[in-house]
Image (cartoon, rainbow, N blue to C red):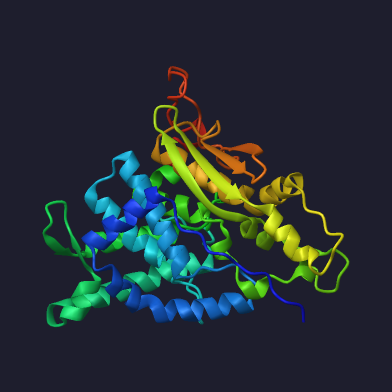
Amino acid sequence: MSSKMSLSEQNSPATQAEAMRFLKENMYLQALIEAIRGRFEEINALLLEKNINKHDLGHQMRTASGAVRGMQMLGFSHRDQVLGGFASITHDIGYNRADPPKAEDLNDVYHGGNKAHFKQHALSGAREAREWLGMLLKAAPTSPEIAKIITYKDADGKEQRLDEKDIEVIVEAILNHNDYGKDDANYDPRKIGKTALMVQLFDKLDNCRQRVYKEHIEPSAFIEGNPEFDKKYFHRAVPYCISHYDFNIDRQAGVMHINYQTDIEDFTQAVRAEFPNFEYSEAHFVEDFKKAYTKNCQIAAEAAGTVMESAGLRPTLMVTLNFASGNQVTLPFSRPDREIYEVEKNAGPGMAKCAPSKADSKVA
């Protein structure tokens, strides 16, 4: 067997570090992490075997830091930020269930009782989180250690425990973080809580090399014609080339800007160690990024646009790929092609509002 490529870790941007400080100051973060650590170790083993990128605690924490920082920038309440943190840190907990539930099990969670085909892990995770958090809520009065897991500080610094309403916000975010029912004719992101949309948004933006298992990085997997060639190699190559990202939000224009920092040279040299003629250009990377993450970016654009109440008919997400050479490529993304929006004709430039189309008016 050939040697695996090394994976260098990158620190999160300083702006997202502010969000982590918020979570550490306002909840017993370590108690929550320790309570779910074993479960995510099981999930890691499963996804490694299934050749799926990491959905580990690192991914949960990066989603949390991004979601909370985004909430801070958009003026979300203290409570929303805390609940967004809880939901982000547990949003992938539904992987590895032996008995996946049916969509009917959580009809009451989805606004409007939509029976779309949900992604298994999102639905499983929502059901499991509701059961688990409910159990902790009942046990908390007699167990200080359990109480810590579901305790947070409110805006006045007073300790509070999650209540049933808080749990439903968390469950809604876990259920809606994936692309479970977006092909359903009645799907409407405006019926999803904005805290849930922020978790969905930053889950879809975490596309960096920390998501890649070292065991999945085999140079021969990137050489077409080899027996070990991976037809979906771009799901490994693209995040491997992205060290980290940062973002900013233009509320007036209703646009979110994402900056991915990339270094394809590290990837190219690693493959050339065994295949000297291997070529991977910036143009190759751009095309592979589109293959790997167009769907994610469309979902992120829809979530961002809905939260900011900007029109879904124009780009709401501008993704810039920054190369080590100094070159940049910017890709605009808008929501998936759906018929539930129209632009208000009287809205000013950059301030268009979401409005139901005629076909959707009976659903709202």
